[in-house]
Amino acid sequence: MEKIKKVSIPKESRIIVISDIHGEIHLFKKLLKKVDFTEKDYLIINGDMCEKGENSAEVVHLIMSLSTNNSRVHITEGNCDALVEELLDENPQIINYLLHRNSIMKEWLEAVGYILTETSTAQEVKAILLKQYRKEIDWLNQLPTAIETENFIFVHAGLEDISNWQDTPRKTAITIPSFLSKKHQANKYVVVGHWPVINYSTDIPSDNPIIDDKKKIIAIDGGNVVKQTGQLNALIIENKHFSYTYVDHFPTKIAVKDFQAAIKC
Image (cartoon, rainbow, N blue to C red; front, side, top):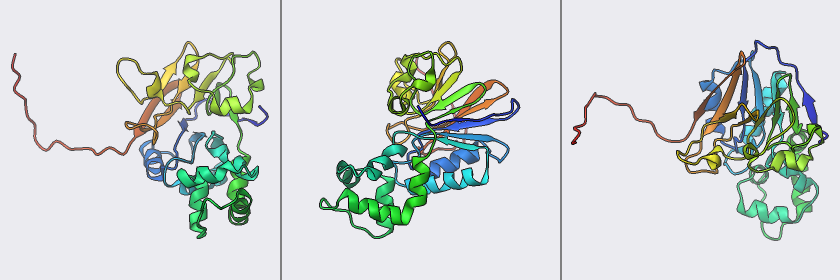
């Protein structure tokens, strides 16, 4: 793994970690407001800002702005963010992907009035997007794969179970499945997204973050967009304590009158 960013975070600081936003700009803004995010906080976006949802371009634009204006905002790449490499490598399969999936690249093409068809070529699409969105593409392409702090490693999917975790291949770090069922030797808490936590549920399904102190793994992907019951989670680290909150698209109701249901025994 070549792109590892080291960040020093003061002990008294609050760290907010969010992953797998997947283009849900309204949920992302709602979550930042709910956690009362300020410039004093450290914000870690742990991969998969884009793809699947409908506003990936807005999400990336906002996070780019946040990171430009605040040195305490840091981002790791996710497998979905890394898809711009397929464009840069002129992978012909990118056309079929863009025709059938929500994608930041598809949003960009629509914004410039380009109509994508089955006869479009990767070379043609690449030329158009680099002309209009080179800044965004370069930014996505240069994101670190992992962020290491004094007590944590933030990586999108996980690490290999090897003595020198830095030797984990990049592809593994952003795509390894079911990391909570595995282990690592990093001797720090490893915070991941990528794999919806509901996949680990047995008796009672839950989309809330899972903290495994024994393994030192924290999984926070709430299944936003990819699961029917999905939610966007925020892990909050403060004074060596963990907490979390979330937002979702489900409607809420307010009780206007107290009532007591009759119970038959």
